[in-house]
Length: 175
Image 1 (cartoon, helix red, strand yellow):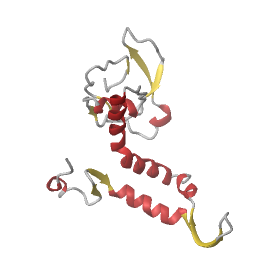
Image 2 (image 1 turned 90 degrees about the horizontal axis):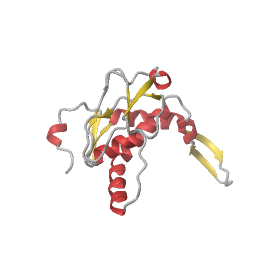
Image 3 (image 1 turned 90 degrees about the vertical axis):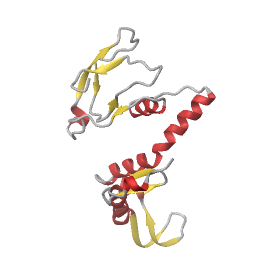
Image 4 (image 1 turned 180 degrees about the vertical axis):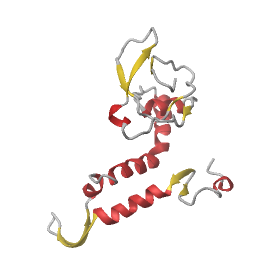
């Protein structure tokens, strides 16, 4: 398969191609700069092994940083994006059960032929992360019922994969 280079030629220079995937170079560049600025500790140090070094890498400084932690998460998601489809395929071939929650159910739906709404307007606001609690509606056959759910996600299932059924959904403008 692969990425059609003619189609990507006009994209912003911050978008790159890695293998058959488009990647956000600005996030990678920002992460690389934070690693250089925060995680690489320069100067003569004695490591726990007793060995002396001119520098060491302390990734805790990056993952605890307010800007570093989200970048690590996003870059990691970009890197492992294709692994999930491979894992689903192998699990199904082996007859293994799959537990899919949140993004996982979206990935499972797409892997089995469904589609996503890629962006729900107004659903990616920072203040929604902890405060966008929505009530739920249920299918009559739903066995488990929860009164509310955090609905700050900016994506949602559009078309269900064959064999899927919806038991609950948020009561908001994205219905």
